[in-house]
Image (cartoon, rainbow, N blue to C red; front, side):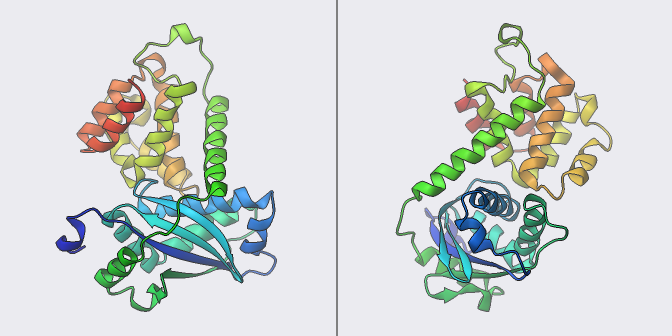
Length: 282
């Protein structure tokens, strides 16, 4: 557990995650420099961080840079709990596993790739003392970010959101706007942000929310949640959460009201996420 003296005050810090594929023919640095490969590699990184930190909240990517032979990913952590969860995932090998799985799928490779990683805070190589959580957190906290988010990263983030938006439009049935209640998800224009905020922010708690929704949704009862987890395991937490809401929308139609999602979030003690969703969907 993080020390109270560290976690009780506003907390930020930064670290650089260095990545290198050890598989012949798969060079992450070269792929990122390629105009077509850049977005795919960025998506692999985003999905991996989402898996490792329990969602997309609490951190941001500031820059991805050339650290030949590595690809360097500069990460800013916005709270100590997210940073600790990431460190635990990194120490256990979950980060490498996620990189391998997402890389294999998105790069259309015949088998999972082997990825070498290194984690640094300033000049300190954190791999050397991952068993000392407090020390790692202190070094990351002392390594304050010296830059804002890179324009290239902002563009890639927008491209990723646009892809998710197009995916939702294609996968959900079209209905006339006037036939959708004000309190229902429309997945169009501003209302679509609900899906993005939920999928990005719920992290590992998506199963609990799914079971809460399943109390009044037949499509989410019984083994439905575990089946979704198994079916989209390789795609990661974002896709699992996305598919949960997709299943809820398709099954409930006009009755898939925002109030039901908010109630499920409140039942799962996810008040912050519920408040964020209400703010973007007045």
